[in-house]
Every structure is written in structure tokens, then in C-alpha cells.
Image (tube, rainbow, N blue to C red):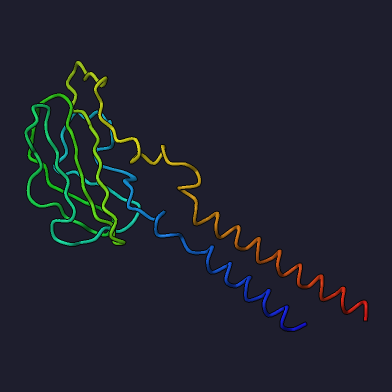
Length: 182
């Protein structure tokens, strides 16, 4: 009797431990926000660009980079890209050129996965800007992620708790049944 209960409890603990960890393949550094924001329309160019990712970035020299180009294709990013936790920052030269500014980035997450992407933002004058040629890597936008991709860890914890309670109730029910039949 005790050995069957021990096996069930051991299996339950193993399932709990397995399900409560996020598989490494699902834990990638994804762009979750930026300043300036993806496809935003600005009247003044900021002095720096800041990209925020869903997990910490590796701080290996040269592993992370962000490049910003103005409407004529000239690079306006200045100095080195700087990593701080899950953010990547780079200074920008001043520009008053109205139009589409293009951002290319490449980062290395702490778990070693390289991620690259691109997006545009706009510097607008009084007449606005034509956004019909917007470049956005849709896989990098949080709104484009599935519910499961965003909440996999939460769901695994809930399922683990439910499974553990179910196993415990099953074991207790069988134990009560055996005690009452004696």
C-alpha cells in the first residue's frame, strides 16, 4: 500500500516540477516596447532610442546593436549600444528630416538566443507622413503573440496545481475507501 502511494506522490511531484518551469525554447527575448514606439508619429526626434525586451540581454561586447537611419538612409545612431538588464539604448544625432526613420536591431538574450528585428517610426511636419510603406516585423509586436505564448508559465502553474490537487484527492479517496472496507 505504502509503495503505491509513494509512487503516485513521486510522480505527482515530478509532474509539478516539470510543468512549473518554462521550457527554454519558449523563453526568447522579444521586443515588448520601444521609445520611440513602433509606428509612432513624432514632432521632435528623441536624443536616444530605447528598446525593452521580455528578458535580460547578454552583455557580451558587440552582441547587441541597434541602428537608426533617417529618411535618406543615413545612420543617425551615435556611439555604442548600451545594455542594462532587459533594455538596449543608443544615442541619436539630431535630425529634422521629416519622414520615415528605420530601426534595425540585433540582440542576444541571456540564454544565448539571437533575436533580430526592424520597425519604423515617423517624424512628421504639419502635413503628416505617408504610412503606406511602414516596415514592421509583426512577430516582434506583443499584440501579435498568441495568448499561450504570453501566458505559458502562468498556465503551467495553474495546470500543475490542478493536477496535484487531483492526484491528492484520488489518493485520499482510495485510502478512505480502503479504510472503510476493513
